Image (cartoon, rainbow, N blue to C red; front, side, top):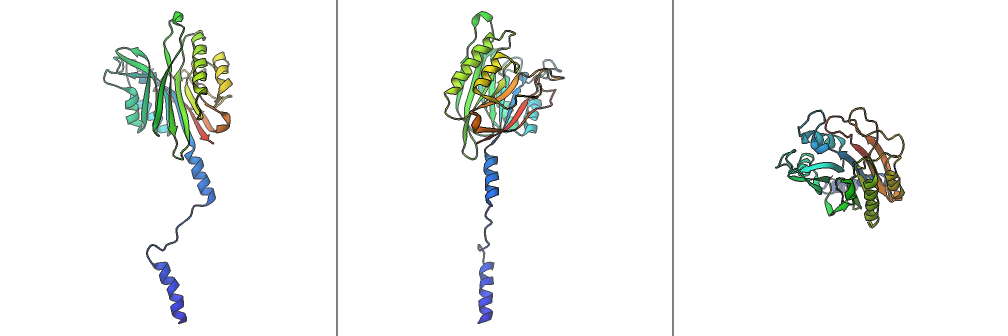
Length: 276
């Protein structure tokens, strides 16, 4: 009788499907939740995928290689061609980069150009919803190139939502148009109820009035010793940024300027953010 009593528990344990399940520890669950709310962001002015060292050459694979190497979740692209003569009438650069990186794309036209369109784009590993293309103001007397703000709602694997925006401000020496444009951007994004991340080429250095306006409503991922972003070789100034609002919703885990000098005339900027 004693022998039977000893054997029965052993037989029960050996029955298929009776193996005890491993329950994640609270620390493992917390770490997984934090990982789900991390966002690796890249801002990249791609110079319509024309490497400066190779005039008239379009090398989308080189741009895609940079994005893939950085293992990011979402990308703000500037100077993107769609069906232009210079980049190929059949080439949609945003969609082709999405294919090469395994991401989704949203292109926002700023102007008609060279038989096609030219503007900014967002690439994302996560679905893009509620996409918007908001034209930015330009003083017509300056003959400045028209610019735009692209935005989309992104849902992270953990369920958290945020708005991601991409822009490319006026490139003229005087900052009149840039001031008009940053004012409009702030007005548009202040209406968002979700947390916001904005990235792009602002064509303005950190001490400019344009970036002071940005800083009044957003927090940049880096504000000191951040690294220069242009030109691609021996860069001398910073004009590309990643910023967010409200400040309390985000934590900056890392910020860096990617040491890449072939694919474009800008170096990409990368930040890993945690959405609280």
